[in-house]
Image 1 (cartoon, rainbow, N blue to C red):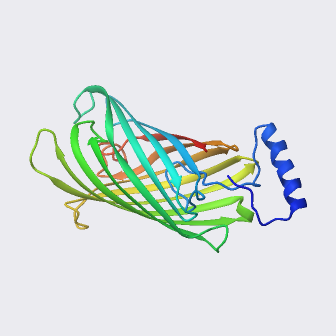
Image 2 (image 1 turned 180 degrees about the horizontal axis):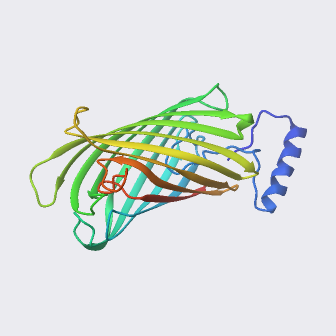
Image 3 (image 1 turned 90 degrees about the vertical axis):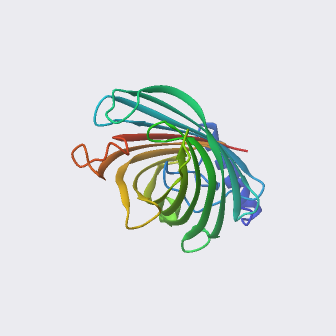
Length: 291
């Protein structure tokens, strides 16, 4: 976070004193700006200021199939750096754990393993604070070693692109974001020689409202779908998730907690939900440190 430099000296002194007072009791009012993640799944369009860095820890807990006992946890450690006020880059290191017992269609397993890495590049075209709305592009190539769904050993190479939109209201107290994601994957089982291609299309949106200094409450939704052989005529599965989130942002650190239950999916095997390809509920915690 950085204080705006365009204010005059007297206003600067008063505002800085107010910030210090709020920090002393653990809050930070909107007297500083940062690339905070108000959402667990959706992305804002803002980038880190030039020369600033952050480190995040992501933990996503996924549970619930049509039967048996299923638990998966995704771990991501991300380092992010702002190279200019409009361009930032990140590197991710991933791990995954699966505990599967007597789930129809799944092999029993209890494992924890390193799950590859990826890099990400984000470029901001418009700022929601300086322009009428924010707009950014995001590109992420990477490699995974295990299936997110089954936990089987696989080689997975992917390229993900996002279009990020953000609109602020009421002086920044309300944040609305929209993301459109296209991801192309090349994968094959280990051992195995044949390669498959899959196209994933995702749409995520979220609204977050500042209820008190440093505290935000919101709701977000995720619609995710996969197409076999990268053909739009070959829909393999889709699911819709909607749930609440809470965000806290202090001067040097922040956290976001999101709860996303599956509302519907296809092909359905549990009411209107698809519990073969997705889980009943996902919970994601993100903790960030600014430096």
